[in-house]
Each structure stands twice: as C-alpha cells, then as structure tokens.
Length: 120
Image (cartoon, rainbow, N blue to C red; front, side, top):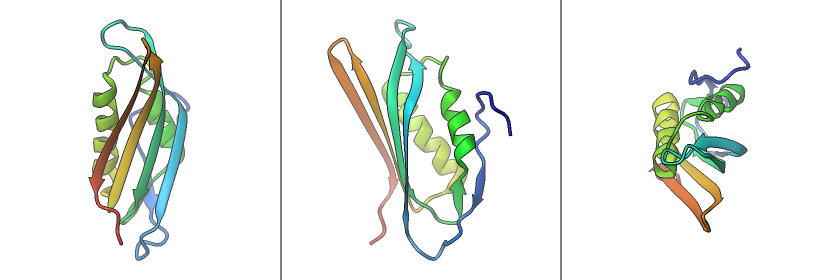
C-alpha cells in the first residue's frame, strides 16, 4: 500500500457481522485549506460507526484523510464528504463523523454529520 495521500479507501470483512458493536477513530492531525483565504485549517476528525458487512482499513483511512491537506473546503462540506465517502464504501448500520476544527478568528467550529441510527 502507498504512503502518499490517496482517496483509495480499502475495506476488510467485518469479523463479527451478526453483532452490532461500535468502532471509533480519533484523527487529530486532519488538515485542509480555507477555501476563502487559502490558510490551513486544523481539526480532529472523529469517526464512529457500527459496521454491517465491511470495516474500513486504517492505513487507507489515514492516507484518505491526508489527501485533503492541500484542498480548499468549508468545514461543513469536508465533514459531510468524509461521511458520504465512508457510507458509500462500507454501508454501515450507523455512522457519525465529527469535524472539530481549531479556533480561527475567535470561532471554533464543530460539525457533526450522521447516517442511520444506532442499533438498540
């Protein structure tokens, strides 16, 4: 597998698809560019999901998130794009992506996008 930015997300079979269990990732080194000023925006991306048949492979997720580093994106757009790409990839029972962006101009932005519902 490559060690440069890539949008090529990979999967592996869920080892326990009959059990609804939660998987969480904290990605504290996310960077994209402000589409207005071109300055870097730094964030922690938090992903939690309940897998169905597939899980996302972590190195590919790391390279995927890295691919946003030189791309201009509003916080709301990039958070929703990450959710959409992951949902399209693994079709989870539930997924939540939170973009927790560092303070810029005195404002901290947290965007949360969800797909599905948590199983009971």
